[in-house]
Length: 109
Image (cartoon, rainbow, N blue to C red; front, side):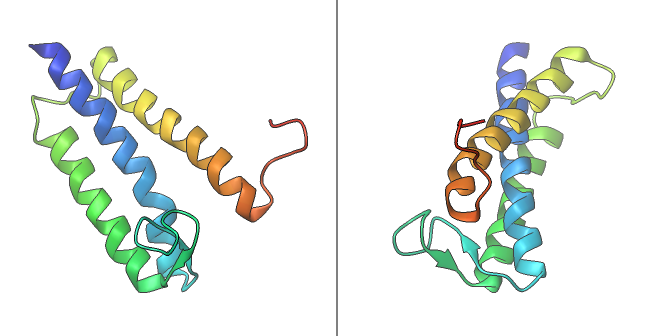
């Protein structure tokens, strides 16, 4: 069942990547999109909401990476799974939030 651990690491990486922009924006005192805004994911949430949401994502990432199985930084499949989760969410976030913050070029790349 080692592949289930890899799936956990993939989702752990995704939660880790999602935690960073929310937590950093919140600590900087800037509003940012969150699932709790109106409309969800489009409107801005307060910096406090983003700190809490970012922290919650860090906790879930920790649980999925450090507490499931035996994550090993020297095991290629573990690192690749977590890295893919980070890359996928980071790319999706860049496309989604780039619409609001001027990060997308006219060509879409």
